[in-house]
Image (cartoon, rainbow, N blue to C red; front, side, top):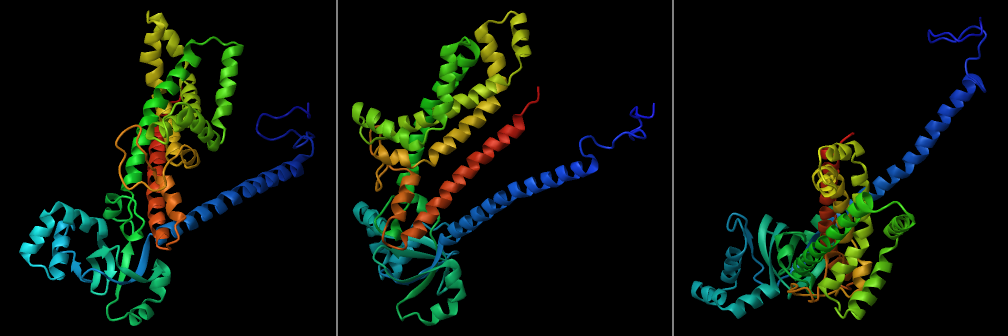
Length: 416
């Protein structure tokens, strides 16, 4: 009887404390578990550090110290003189150039003169100027850039930079990511380059992608989960959909180039880009929607049938409402992937330089990732600041989308 285990939580006398090696084996397993946890934690920490360093580099590169010999008046204006900037700053600048009020009114009323002024100049709220912090400046594409320093490098040598200024030179702490950055189209000159055309092209393409991919993806998921029989044909479709989700995006670009751009004759248009990206995210939407539909308990379906509901009534009024949180999460993640894609759009003809907005489904276009790619490749070193500003915008959009997906997942998650 002494070998019978005790139920008091302590082993009986004469019984081994642990089978197959006793306490030493158990301690070794715990050490191995801690070692494995440490080994897996190190890459995560390193990845987070690398991402943090990259993000800091991008953020600091969106602001730079500039020594400029201005082609404009060279005057700066207090923020209190024009709290909202815009035309008020333009009037102050024209007055500083020596124009009287009648000449200013005539210049601003002439549509061509007004267009040329805003095409060559940019109204910016500089973080710091020779005259003090937070002052409005009208910068011009004809300004002569004497020097350009990074945010940290310029701050470390600020006194030396000030002492080296010439008689006509001005020092600006220029935030490249400002309101005017979103109001200007692409340009060959960095000081007047903006994200407006790329942002509009992205909205056009992504809106079409959502209109194409969502009905097809969710409809396919409903058919495969609720209506299709479990046979070799549907299993083959399931395997192919999962394989397509892992295909590199460049392959979809080649497919879109041949099918949509050349075979269908769409050319390098908004519609061709949207169809290519819709094919890219379609497998992800189908898989996410199927998983969400599959997570709805069968008992809810049986209860609906027991109350006399038809198949479609059960699917539309019971299954889909309970699966919507998972479907929406998957769709948002898929759209976020489409927004950040560059390779397939380059293949289907996204233009690197488009200084106007898309005006239809078959118009030429550019998107934010392609515009960043174009700016990074420019010879002018100031374009790196413009590219960094666009990268920060793209990262912000992606982070917002991922945050919304995470919130919806946690907010509407159900445990059946």
